Image 1: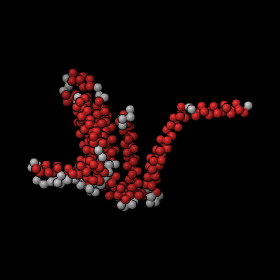
Image 2 (image 1 turned 180 degrees about the vertical axis):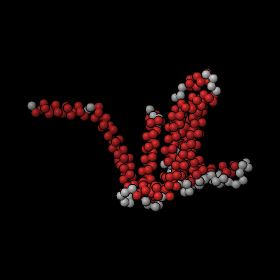
Image 3 (image 1 turned 60 degrees about the horizontal axis):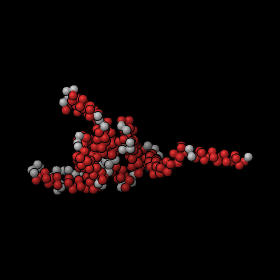
Image 4 (image 1 turned 90 degrees about the vertical axis):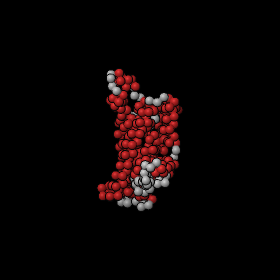
Length: 293
């Protein structure tokens, strides 16, 4: 009697182990473990340090209302991120519109021009803009040679240089979501508007532009999120005079050694990005936006 009972229990255990749900959890367990160790735990530590270092409480968060330097840095970060997003969207919309209405051959070459910068290190691109924008650089030399200006323009070590470098980096991130949305617009809608007597501009303004707004919204939040945490380009082209939140966190950790303040700012950045991603998920399909479906 004991042997059949043990055999039945073994078969039941094997069937439970072989169930689809069990196999599913066994397959994703390594990924969940890695995410917990290398992602969730460090983020949890940052959040914990923000309320415990140097002493338990919300003293670090009170600096948001009392520290002039932190308020100035946050305002600089928000201003540069918003302006970078606006300029990026304007340029990205034009390029995406040209891509959609180009022939396949021209489209391939344009895509190459859009994607190549993504394969070049951000550090290399920042140094390239440093060479172009400095007082003795190619841009100032060309402007003075053509008589446009009598003296070199201040294009670096300020917000102008930072935004130029950031817009250049963010352009592919703005172009691709907008193009993806524009490509799905039924061109028969535009033809129908033209057939009903609308001019080219009216068909674009009343039909094409509203239909392309989901891609614009998705690109704007994506570019803004990347702009908030940008480090290399502001550090190099800003020259320490244009301090954004990522560089400010680095200063707090490596130079001032205020881990609590740095953790608080990192937590604030994390919360803001989480809220923006949640808002983005309500407006567009994140899987499609990031190329997962």
